Image (cartoon, rainbow, N blue to C red; front, side):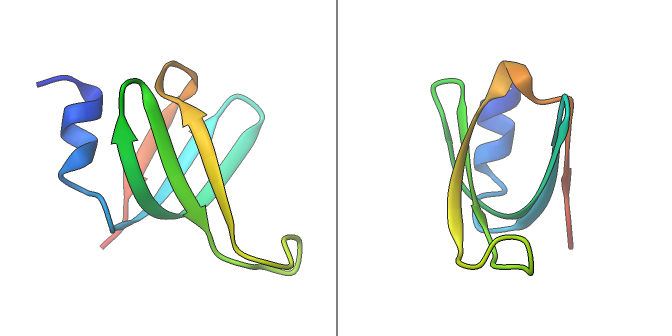
Amino acid sequence: MNFIEALRSFIGRSVELVQPGQFLQGRLASAADGIVTIEIASTSYIPAAEVVTVFSNNITFIRILP
C-alpha cells in the first residue's frame, strides 16, 4: 500500500495538510494518481469554499482529524 492508497480510506474526513510555505485545512475529497484534492471551507481569508489540488510529492505531512 502506498501513500495515495492509504489516503483513499480517509476520503470525506477532515484533514490538515502542510506543504512548503502553505497550510491547508478542509475535507479530503479525492486521492488518485499522485494528486490529492481538498475542499477548503470558507474563512475570513477565503470568502467562498474552494477546491484545492496538491501534488502528493509536495506534501510535507497530512493529519487526519477525528
